[in-house]
Amino acid sequence: MKYYLVIISVLIASLSFAQEKTYNEEDITVSKWIDGTLLSPKETSKPILVIIIAGSGPTNRDGNQNFLQNNSLKKLAEGLTNNGIATFRYDKRVVKQIRQGNVDDNTKFDDFVNDASNVLDFFKEKEVYSKIYIVGHSQGSLVGMLAAKDKADGFVSLAGAGNNIGDVLVEQVSEMAPKLGEETQRVVTILKTGQTTTDYPAPLASLFGPKLQPFMINWMAYNPTDVLKTLDMPILLINGTKDLQVSVAEAELLKAANKKATLVIIKNMNHILFEIEGDDLENSKSYNESFRQLSSQLLKSITDFIKS
Image 1 (cartoon, one colour):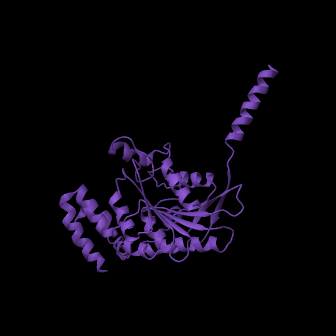
Image 2: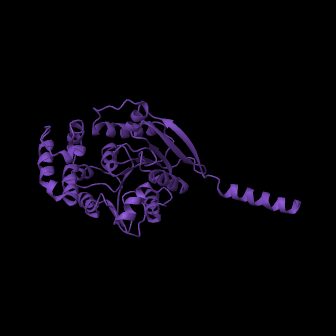
């Protein structure tokens, strides 16, 4: 009996050793609205740091929303840190506001840019990182470009749009509901002038409601291709062929705007960085399937780019 107990003890000890984390984890408050998680590799004294910026909506540091739990950004952070790169990912300010029951309806797109810029400044002032890169996903791509300018050591766009968000919305609505395409174009044209409007079809209220229009006007003031042209740093652009929200063509637009950028198109990767072998139904369901693994090519591409 003692013999079997020894074997069991050894197996348990071996399993615990195999699962031991290669990094330290620390929750950090950067500002009034920004809380996040820092992962630091144990074996590196002055690592490269990657700041991960989430996409649109009330997205938390792990890449999740209330009814969409996939942990995509958590998996990205852990994957990079297991490769020796420190990572910091943070909740968007609206996440904390929702938790506190104090949502600010006057939040602008520029507030997200300022938050990202403050995070970058926070870690630059520590002077413990050899380099700092920005990785922006979806909406976070444009946020990251603007925050990275003249301050970061490199920039990575994950599923970032190349077109103005107004034009992206027109394309998306036209594909899903062709009869609303012209109305979407009309409203977008008005908003691009900086003016608001109450003249829009009810089905478009989720995009152009009165409380959303100031935010959309601010967002539409930026053209990603124009911003990317101004970045003088290593740039990596990544998109997947099964992205239902941002097409490969958007990444190609960004590449055309900055010839020095590196473009990587990953076969079968979707918008939340998972590999999808099946149809659009499987793709959509994956947004709420946290058991899925990130694209291995994605992690390798980012790691190789940052360490090169």
